[in-house]
Amino acid sequence: MQLPGGMPVATFLRDYWQKKPLVIRGAFPGFECPVSPDELAGLACEEAVESRLVIELEDGKPWQLHNGPFSPQRFERLPASPWTLLVQGLDHWVPDVADLLEQFRFIPNWRLDDIMASFAPPGGSVGPHYDQYDVFLLQAQGRRRWQFGGNHDTSSPRVEGTPLRILKDPSWDEDVILEPGDMLYLPPAIGHHGVALDDCITLSIGFRAPTQDDLLTSYTDYLSSQPGADRHLNDPDLQPQTNPGEITPAAIERLQRLITEAMNDPRQLGLWFGQYATSPKSEDIVQPPEEPITPADLYDQLNSGGQLRWNEGSRFAWHGLGLDELALFVDGERYLLSGDARPLATLLCEGNQVANEPLLSLLADTTLCELVTHLHNQGSVYIEWD
Ligand code: SIN
Ligand code: CO
Image (cartoon, rainbow, N blue to C red; front, side, top):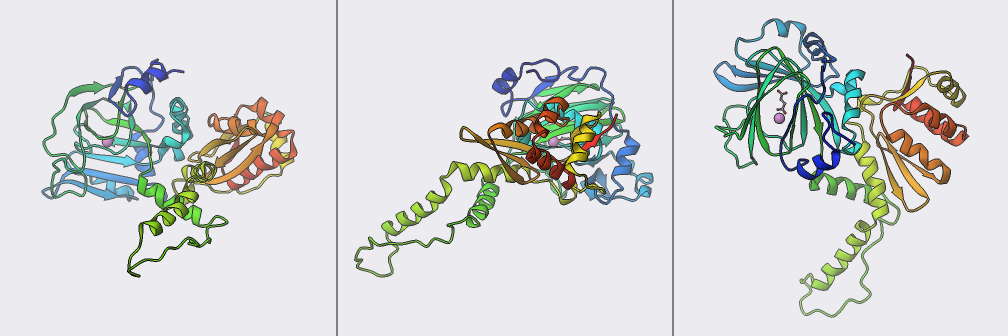
């Protein structure tokens, strides 16, 4: 397995992932940006699309932020000061952009977040900053100068008077100009500043990693809805104590036992995490099709040249549960599969275009055909025709 540009995945994971930046020249030779600046502006006018405008200097204030949706007229009165338009979740809106994600499957599906696009005229940037997450910055149109380096955290000096976290006087280790098709990988916390040299589109393939806080909140919520969670603490071994006000170390031990018994079940953790990690980014991502289909229709369509595809923005993962069982997770729901049914999960999770031949042979099983039909009718997959 290789990265775009040819580096072996094992080398990248060993030497760069979460460790240090990497410039990949010619990662996508001859790359042509699937969206134009006008299309990005059009998307930024849509209610359902998350978009932002960053203006370097506005009414004397540095790095001002405006959230979309914008009116089309907004783009006719942009300031002379450099600016950048950001469109989040572009993969959800543009299937050709979703296809790009297939080049990043060397990182597990559940770590992927989305693809954000930025458009800036010459001089535009979002300011020097660092991010909490790994990102591949693919130069899609025009050139951008990237300066990057240094490890940052919340104590790093910041520019005042802006809602954005802009680094004050950062120093850089590297200074490069990226051309279309070049790509820069940055691990979390590395400072960076990318300034457009031409009319410039950059696609950020962004990853995510939950915080301990997110995990604890969500997992304990899940556990508390599981059978047995209404069990009370018991203390048949209660000992006499001199002061009734004391919460004894023995009481704390009993608490700890009750809590860790619930927390220490890897099966539950796996089942919960798959649902958590595949929950859609926003509610409107998974929309049922206008016409639901029957299992027989689904089979016929796939048998006569239809291609099963993930809904753009839908999330797929699976987790093995012992020797004979696994759980398939799609958009926050889980489906347990055992024995000969298991290959359906691995096949569906491999990539956004599901291989037709092995799929059809699995769909000969009525239960599996019903499962895929259900995924279709809830909007997690659809059938594409050439
Ligand atoms: C940009 O595309 O201009 C900014 C992306 C980033 O710095 O994370
Ligand atoms: Co950034």
